[in-house]
View 1 (tube, rainbow, N blue to C red):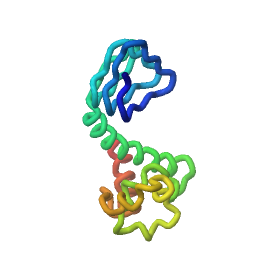
View 2 (view 1 turned 120 degrees about the horizontal axis):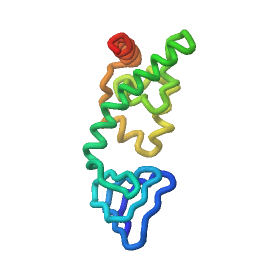
View 3 (view 1 turned 45 degrees about the vertical axis):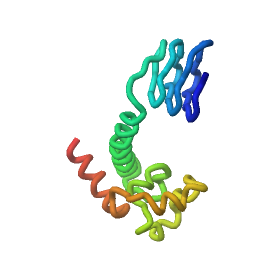
Length: 145
């Protein structure tokens, strides 16, 4: 039995008789030959649980900020110019929330979030006050590397 809210990477094989609990992520190329408990992240051949979904979420929250910094700095280095907020299709949540959404009319927020957009506006608080604060932090990150 396969539970609800499961994310399968590409080329995953699930063998007969295996159970996967609710809210799991199965990494690309994994072979699931043993049952996976709910709220787990599993990878490998054979797939093994590597962390809980909550641990994965916290790790990704930290990593996405570093990845956004690296993206900003790669634009500066490669194109010799300042990044533009509209180039941050997936990272807009770092510097946009209900307090400043009007400053970013070309943001991907509404398109990306679809029917959850209004809920996101009510509940989300960006870690940076605006795009300029985010860029300053990205540049500091670069000099500290």
